[in-house]
Image 1: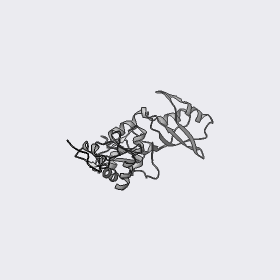
Image 2 (image 1 turned 30 degrees about the vertical axis):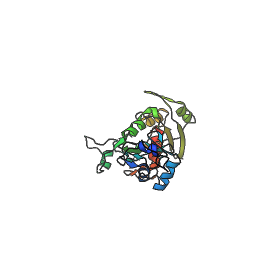
Image 3 (image 1 turned 120 degrees about the vertical axis):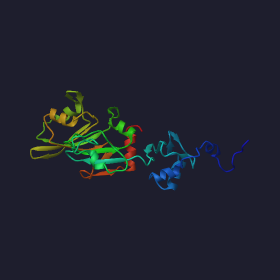
Image 4 (image 1 turned 30 degrees about the horizontal axis):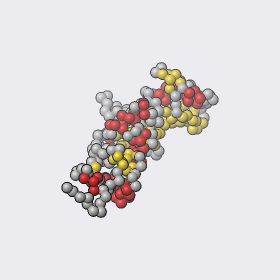
Length: 259
């Protein structure tokens, strides 16, 4: 019959700890959450959960390849095999990893990477801007599934001037051949000679939906750039370049789709 180890109130919980894996505070520190001591404090304060259970025991061991960890309710990716990239797709580049006709593809820009990644959703060849690349299949599926309603922002150049009822029509819904479509937000960003720069925020993912919407209300698009997907911004990323998403961006994307 055993006796409680004197001075250790967590003895019972520790009996159930797996012998393999890494200590939770070490895993969090390696993921960039903070110093090991700061991560210990987060655990002590009950701000860390593993697989849906709040952890307050120091030294808990977890498997970084399988554990689902949240800090303050936001997912922290601790599996270092996972890759998350933001790419600024240039005009004329296909949203594909390969093309049997030899046309330029997104895959050409990441072909020399050690880890294979895939594009999340698509931009048509004539459109430019933000495209996410990852090997996280669960996140990719949810980001592209219409039921999760992830917002995407576009800047479009269209002919001007614009009639006063266009914004109202877009917000209330426009009938396209595949059904009614509404935008979430719409505004005129700049009024240039003979043309307008407009911003469209929409959660729909139908093919060419922004181009079709604007053409339907009398303003065919001459240039279209996607500037954000959920929490991720294109910002100053140059065409043809990519960058790794930071921990905050990755966490917020997961939160937006319930992961």
